[in-house]
Length: 252
Image (cartoon, rainbow, N blue to C red; front, side, top):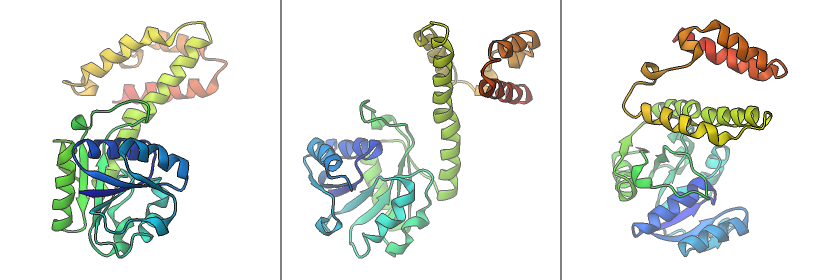
């Protein structure tokens, strides 16, 4: 299978490498920044390109892994291709590729990616959608090459998944950042919290999150919450976040 990877960021890097490892041939990596294309191309033994006129139009699959807002404009460059075209976005609908007419779909890896950290895609859920049963079958075959965790998820469901993922991942990570800042201001190390974070993550592997909620808010420990808010009196934004989340926990 010959694949052109359009994009050279975090998702593109992990998907292209995973596909190469299972025997696919990454023939080109496209990026507007040629240097970025060269980095991923070197990792996958592909050719780096940064001009649409250099695109190989004989590939079996064109994997779009770019910012959501440019997916439609990228698709406009792929009209008339015989190969399957798929995007990897969680928040962008299948219809963003409809100008292609046929032979398109979605292959969304439900995971957080950083180029500097390896991710075992065999453990990553892949959400797929196609414009036709034939396209869906082809996308499913590609997805199963890299993960057994493949689910058919339509655009509306995928958007819901994406919103939930923002709460579970992006917002949680930002709260880690805020915690680190609070500790650093008092000469304490964030490493002290890591066992607590790991234990919390382990609990929800086999439990409903609501059933294992702990802390002063779930106990309605008013005195402790007042003390915390007092400690944050010079940081009104953190007080607001603390109060909002505490109220949400109490109302659950």
